[in-house]
Length: 236
Image (cartoon, rainbow, N blue to C red; front, side):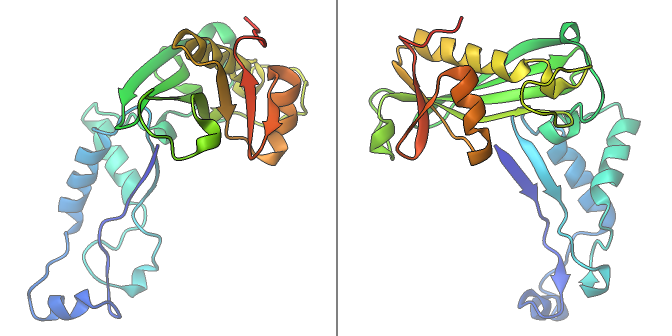
């Protein structure tokens, strides 16, 4: 779901410093590291968010190798010069740009893990800007579940719609977060889970979002998670 790219940074109090002094270790120079970041960022899947690139160390503590904290931006600038782009979630967020409902379309990307089928549902613009997404996890029927209380449950692992916050129920003037995209994503996830044969669905919810899931999507607290019946509570 999320990654951090943290190339090794050489500081004096690290054990690696002794190897460097003996000539047994050589850190990446800035040019090599920049090219490596370009190569990495061009291969990041669309459902992954690169949260951080380069550790936030004071440059005065770095003994050798790259000392630029903004190397992520340098790599992005180089990619732009070559007509390349990073497809990670962070680079594609609409942020505070206003979009209209007709500007976005639903896309679904599916991939397998050793125990689940994962669906990444997203609303995106024609130029690949991301207005919102949902992660739906469908456990393989014969795979042991680490949480017995969620046996045979589909799981909404994350819902995120971008834009400035408004009060619950307040209308939108183009903010992606308030065009009902989150509700559309949840409805679609429920539909996909039901069609895949699941009778119940759970959601990982923060305390502050429980009212939203209960009021608008028929979820109820069920132990540590909020769950909904996919047979009875049909909203579509």
